Image (tube, rainbow, N blue to C red; front, side):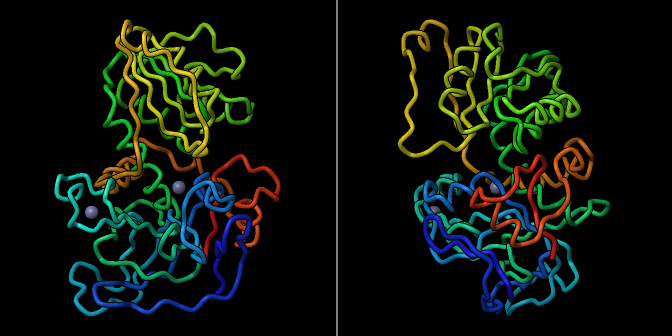
Length: 327
Ligand SMILES: [Zn+2]
Ligand SMILES: [Zn+2]
């Protein structure tokens, strides 16, 4: 089969790859669709640790076409979305109910072969049934949304709160839609890209701003979802007393930001971070099925596997919607 394979920093290409076989406890999925995100670009340029070679693709939905020995909860024909993060179940973090902080965390599309290929083998435990009425293609958004759900669990949210979101890609738009549902009455979307600001308004932002015009912002919750240090710093500056900064965007490992500890102290500012989406896949699928998060605000047209490779290497045309491939 043809797969999008990461083969070391700067190298991602469509190439021949052996079809997977179902091991004990695993199913084979006929991949319906697989999405790409900023993390794939970080993997490709070497700023996010990954195995190589590895098939990329951690946002995957498909149909079960084969069940391995011992699989009990799934049948051929089931439509599922994949939780890509696999924890060991035996380390101190797993034992304390924080599987995403696992000492031996492995992830499809990062350290195990992912879904940017027509077939994928997945342990039964990582498969989540797609609710009736939710399109299989839209279910690729369950993984990024599961991360957003976990992130919003980690901060305080209340009706009537004010918020601002830096970075209006997939995560930023999902944040806005969820904050609306959680009762935020004022949500500013911040981006240097005019087309992203337009999308944010459609998604429920009450105002949108260019990055250079955020000085007047004063909010309870600032979300940095762009992966930029200057956005981190201006998000921190935008907080009211008692406010929280949610660190969500992926920066480069060597990036450093300016923080004034005395201000954190005097204004009781919290800095909260969030990593992946432990045990939040089913909630994400329900939010998509209910339309609380509208997939049509995020998904554009599908691209070919080769176009996906170009996007990962930042050599293709800019894309305004989420990049994904259908098989
Ligand atoms: Zn992703
Ligand atoms: Zn563990």
